[in-house]
Image (cartoon, rainbow, N blue to C red; front, side, top):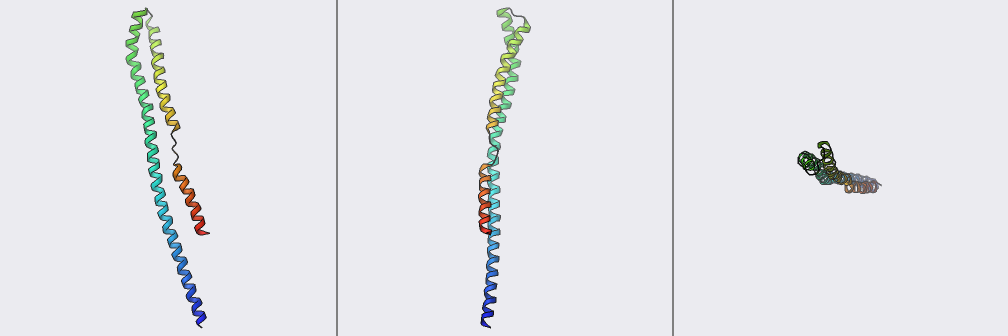
Amino acid sequence: MDTRQDTRQDARQQERSLGELFSDLTRDMSTLIRQETQLATTEMTQKAARAGKSVGVLAGGAVIAYAGFLALLWAIVYGLTSLFGLPIWASFLIVAIIVLAIGGIMAWRGYDTLKKTDLMPRQTVETLKEDAQWAKEQTA
């Protein structure tokens, strides 16, 4: 009879131990998920800030090109017409080509910088892979 009681008591201890282990695993996974979420949020915020700066450079280049087009168009057109005796249309064409080239170069630089910005949260993806491996090892 003592053997049966010992066996039942051992079984209860094993069940409780398994329950405690499962509870610990659940708690650890919950903590891990929260930490991964925080990491992803931080990483994406940093990447969005970098992308925002690139977009700002791109937009700034476009605004400057437009303002330059308007200001230089009139000033240089009259200068070319006065100095070289060019027809107004030829002066406008020369000025437009130069200003658009400058604006295009600025816009290209902003676009190129934006294109090089990596928006993938690489660190988070890597740690999620590690977490998945850890979870498999815990349940095996």
